[in-house]
Length: 424
Ligand code: SAJ
Image (cartoon, rainbow, N blue to C red; front, side, top):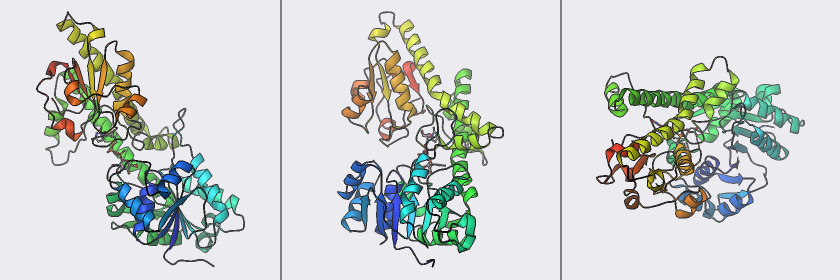
């Protein structure tokens, strides 16, 4: 017998940047939630009402959810009405194709506890066709149950793909307010997933099939990547032509149908720099623009490094009493975007570390969102903004609010490499 009632008990597999906030938000809407993670430390931390990642408002949300008795974590799956899978889908370094081993492991892990009427939702960003593959892995593990790919609406198990689309730094708010794409393997699968998400989603829940929902998620991030690549390419062209790219973009954006994004030191984070590759690896001949955008953005840190080298060269020519060994370079910002402490896949970190490895003199770093221990772990020297102002070359890598409002009177603009256009 199948169940179509509102799901009362859910299980979230993978308690990272998406799974943990999702679990906490469900629990705050009176749903009983079991979070499952392979990492024993993560499970223990969460069961103490604490968190292992930094995200605005998440500490409070998890503390409340755990103390209310609605949310607990475990390394072992238990029976539930619905299972949400939010595990990483990194790309393989050799050919950029998606590594689905965590999705497969999650499917095999929950398979033994599945029962008729259960809904399984994949949330991880995935190449087109992944939900169907997951459905096959589940069917292989549970030949006693029927699945939508074989039995359509009559199946015991319902399967859907509902991509997360939330912005790091605003995850809790966007989980609730964003529209949600619901890709069902059958209309009944979609209907059951809509019912589940409507527990807390205030945006619209829009139904489609699994493949279109998978592609929509990849398309959103590729759209942003291509637009940032356009801005980054403009910045390199403007540098060659001796123009201010930020003034140029500001002027062009006054056209009613032009909206160019902002150049920077490259594209970081674990989404926009990864997801477009899933389209490229599915359709390598066709995805020419998307591939080129990735290459343009991936090349930007190297270009910035060259710019720093030529700025130091100009400084040494103008200051013959100095040598590279006694010139100091200050880098401002390490995070992958403003006002967060997330250093993963950060072009700013990559550039600062490359400068430290290459430069014969001292390299100092200002990053208001991390501590000494974290900087030391990255082999970098953290100093205060005031102290960094005494450096000879200044490299602005992240447009943190603190840097936008800082007093930079002591810096000579001749020796500033400003990748974000806030000090020029
Ligand atoms: N960046 C620029 N110039 C810009 C905008 C961004 O250089 O004009 C850079 C940022 O500095 C950063 C990178 O791009 O290094 C990515 O930052 P982001 O704020 O654009 O995006 P993410 O990675 O934090 O989150 C994105 C979001 N996707 C879109 O906006 C289409 C988010 O909604 C997704 O849920 C998330 O990816 C994800 O998880 O896929």
